[in-house]
Amino acid sequence: MSENGIQIDEFPDLKNPLLIAGFDGWGNALKISSGMAAYLIRTFKAQPFAEINSDVFFSYDESRPVVHIEEGVFKSLSPPGGAFYAARTEPDARDLVILKTDEPNLRWFGFVEELFDLCSRLNIETIITMGSMYDHVLHTDRIISAIASDAALNSMLSQKGVNSISYQGPSAIHSTIHAEGLKRDFTCMSLWCHCPYYLQGTTHFGLLAHLGKLIASLGGFELNTQDLETSWEKLNLQIEKLIENNAELQAVVNELRKAKVRGSAAEMKGTLKTDEKIINIKDFLQPK
Image (cartoon, rainbow, N blue to C red; front, side, top):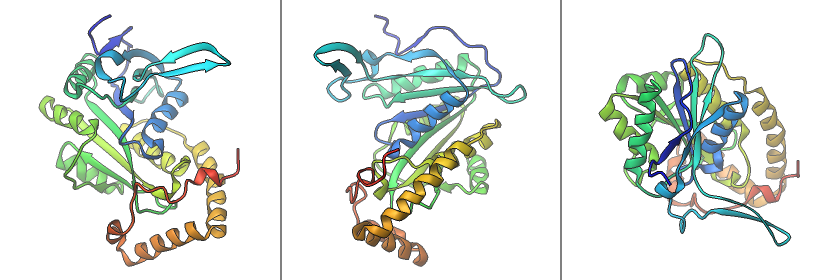
């Protein structure tokens, strides 16, 4: 087997492409990151042209291959990893390269080096990575924070209503990408969605729509997210009804609303645990 971590089938012919990367794993609350990547792939009918070599970048005792067995008959085995997809947008807009993959377990710096080498061969100069975290926010909020490669880009993001991030602590693969981007003089942005921790187990279509619109605006291409907005309207009605009829969830949401009015949601971080599943809301929602 080839030792290359990124195995390229054929280089696509793209116009001024932008790389948008969505990782599953640590920074993928409510699967916003991987979900947005999948949505872009589906919307633009993007075609795969390169795959991640799972033997190089994954530890199988941490990210185990998924087996499909049906009534005692072996069907398939799917290793961790992902792929790069090429998407062509409108005639006057830039094309896209979409990376949808599990976050690597191994050799982050080697992965990022190969990623940037691929970008250089495709004439990609801008990379947008996506992430999401559980936070003390309401389901009606649509809050995105960002990390930018320079102050001017950060200022532009602020004008679009995106918050700046100040943080010290354990990182995701996104930070390794930023570090290499600085060395190579790439434009890098990392967009992080703040997800209500009490919505674990469902999909926040509203946040996905908001993220999609922001990425399209930053990338200079058109993206119609009305289908996501429609799905969110339906789901939001179920959530509001659930809040009315569930005392435990109602207490949590009311406390968050009070903190938001006081402007003191940050003070609640010491009293509520964001990694605690207060309620797995999918157990209460009506099946589709």
